[in-house]
Image (cartoon, rainbow over all chains, first blue to last red; front, side):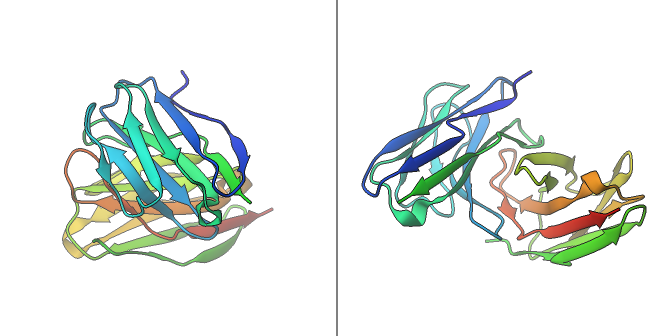
Length: 111
Length: 110
């Protein structure tokens, strides 16, 4: 009963490097989300996918791209990492009018 | 977008005490959730409660949608209740494009 699985759990990048954060859910949810959480703040939505084949921008999409690979998987890509993208990244999934379930997060530091 | 305010921002309780956390929001919603972020950073969904009252053990929540607020009650608090409690609200339909509040940080001391 894995729920939402995020990889990696920790990552350190240099400015300008690229990387992809992976997220997979096994609850057959239609909707998936990427958030970032900065110290002392709530979560802010980066991108979401209401259903397989669709993606939309959230509150803070600049510097990120996403891919809804299939119903289970939703990846987040940083093309050219910047120090301002140092954060904790959470993936979540949900069914329609159902609670959101979160992964354990990826702690990303950009030097 | 919807504005979400949570109060109090910080709360310290003696173990066994009760508390009420409040979430005010600026627009009508069809989606309201309460989450607990534990000291290890994990986010646990406590309630999905766009209206009405729900109870789960020592926790209960009430949302009065017409007056644009929700309350989370914690009774007989335990040290494991420590962490940050977030309210998240939305009005975009079945998929949950929600806005998070900045949270209430709760510390329960023995």
